[in-house]
Image (cartoon, rainbow, N blue to C red):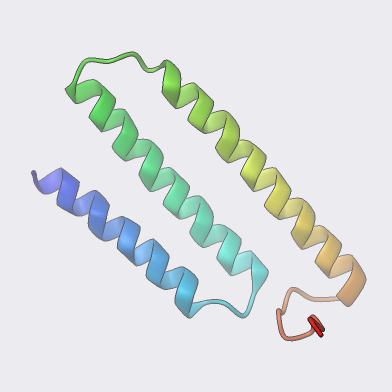
Length: 93
């Protein structure tokens, strides 16, 4: 019971940190990886509680690594083109 509340609180803190730190792409990527880590740990506890297979957690790790690599490649591209990782330098219009 308390562990579910703890993971829910950590997930909400991760979402709040994304909404408060939306100036730098690197900080957003760190917050996303924090959220993925919290989801992975809660999924491991859930699967252990019901004594299910851990095979799904391997797929989750694969997709989270792909998400991290995609975010880092976007960060590198943004830094090479604009010189920094601020979102204010992007001209959306």
